[in-house]
View 1 (spheres, rainbow, N blue to C red):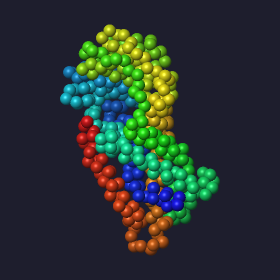
View 2: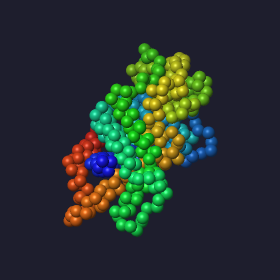
View 3: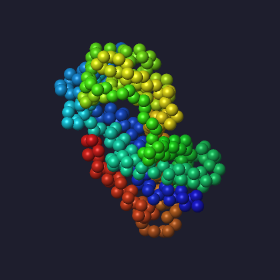
View 4: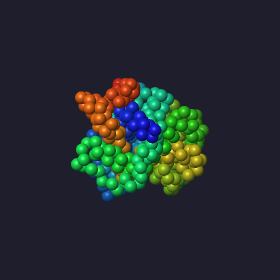
Length: 387
């Protein structure tokens, strides 16, 4: 029974599963891929101190006359430029890249990029979130079934951690060895993806955590300060929250908001930047509220942990590279699993079909929704990236 369940879970939706695993794996390094194809994002690291956030915001504001500042994101690594989002009106958001050591604008970028494509495709297939997220996250049940049945069918699996694959034993034997070896070493990673995937499903079905604390809305229309004015506000925020390492500044909208948000990382582990923030009134410079990640309740902390653990963003580039490597291994499990089915189970039939033709036949009617969902996400991409 375990063998049947393992084969079914790994084969029937293997094309769709491979697509989701591959886009998720690439999404781990999505910022780095954008950096590779966007010259404006690349800067030479310097030993000198970086300029103030106010100067960065002022440079972007001057470069887009008539635009309204939306957010400033400081570089995630020294070789990245700072990124400023500027609203040009009519829902047109432009990315302005600024050298964090010279405050010089290095170039512009559109709203659509590799990061948005990979994250949105992986998360909800460019479909409306209420439909796309449950479809993608439901694969966590197949992953869970594959993990449990794989361990049951692999007798004394703990011995397999140090077993070398047979490189000269033919495709059937090699695919089986690689499948078992990759599956064992990625057990922790697969379990983590199952846990976070199921959590995303719980959130989308109504089990989401309570909203983070926020100050009341301000009635007056708020400005989007830059230059020395913004630096003065940041200095007050830093005094109110000394341990805050500022990574982003979010400006109030033209219609009024809850204030200027200065956010980043501090003492709490495995939380998104939004959990540590200082809310300020840009008109009078008053601190409206200080939010600390360590004060969140258990439900909120679990919600905050999901993204850093799912995408490996909690430890910088070294951790993301580890997540990427194990994502490749996890994606490879789908491929080697299909090869095992085709070469080992179907070869005995002595059919004239090729191995992949036999695999497609084994997928049965499930191949149509699998390919259909992939094609649908690609068709919806232009509209999804424009929104």
